[in-house]
Image (cartoon, rainbow, N blue to C red):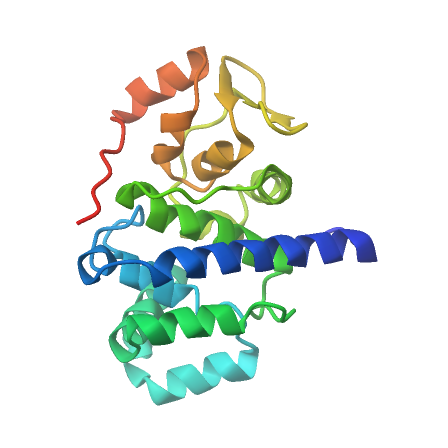
Length: 234
């Protein structure tokens, strides 16, 4: 991560806090059926995604302590396996109210997980909020400013280990053009729309195509066999 000015870092954490606040507000109003509704993350319910959002401030010591308390984690090698199992454990241990309280407790802190930067924390807050909201058909705005910052980071690291947690969509050969931010990447047929929807696409979520247009978006929909998400509140 390139060095950020104090002003840029303040803006980044303000974006994280804003998204955490609004995601917690949304989660607080869900019914039991909605908590158990499938999210955009394959195999994860809304409850799993929300539980994962409570695990965004873990130091190396915290991680080792968690594994020590839950030795079953050793049976799930690899980054994705570790992330999935930790979310499953927390989702089983905490009530929805406790999950929401833990997310709110992170508002105003400036801690982030070991081995990543605050930019990954921002991306998680933004994208996982949509993993919950989109399949439930609930509004949860992705602010253009923070979304553009996260999209820049994800595009720059799309071939690094940081991208290994996401499904890799075939985005080479397209021009991704934001309509609500000064953001454009790639060359080829245009994929046009809000930068938040582009961020979903970069992080492996075809649901972003539901808010994107242009000849490139049409080709991608056909190539991926994507059909619009039909929200259900459960």
